[in-house]
Length: 152
Length: 84
Image (tube, rainbow over all chains, first blue to last red; front, side, top):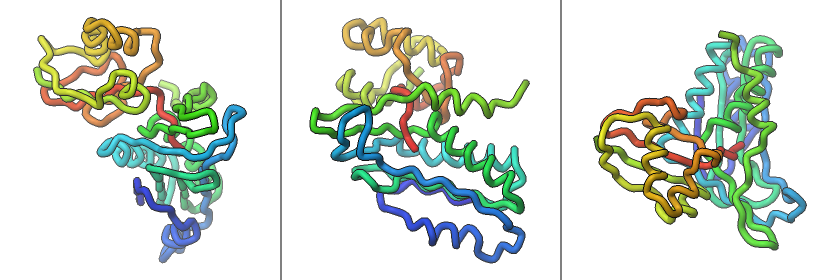
């Protein structure tokens, strides 16, 4: 399991190659890359700053990876999330999941993204021509995360 | 009971502080701690009011209003997260 919280950019190809290396059991890799959009709520985004909670961010990402491994039969996962100053078009996050078959890889990848959107302590601040503002959480993110809740 | 408070993002800006150490009069839940802070009045009451959407972490794990706080715990309040 690879979890990294870092300022610098990541190389998707290199990370996926590392995920597959020496693992003949891997038959499927599903991945998600989140990037900075240059338009949000009608305003041009000039820059984005990602704040995070040092000490908790890694734990939160490791925890959701552990949950994914419990629920699906996976070979491995990689989650890399950046923080700090970012520009439109920049990569923000990578979630990559390797498994024997595609069903688990797709499901676990979507699960991990939905959960990190509601439980990983990051906050985006946009700078637009109108000034700076904190991005508001979307109700759709809570709905997406809630659909993964297992019945009691 | 000593607790380390942390505030992030817009909440930190509204309160004008990134955190503080507080001495709580007794053991309490995260929800009760939020009410205790509201009782300070002013910007604390406004920003931490019950109808404001906030998340809380206790000991660096996402928690909720019912989570019991232990001596020395780090308790963080913040707006709903927006990572990813």
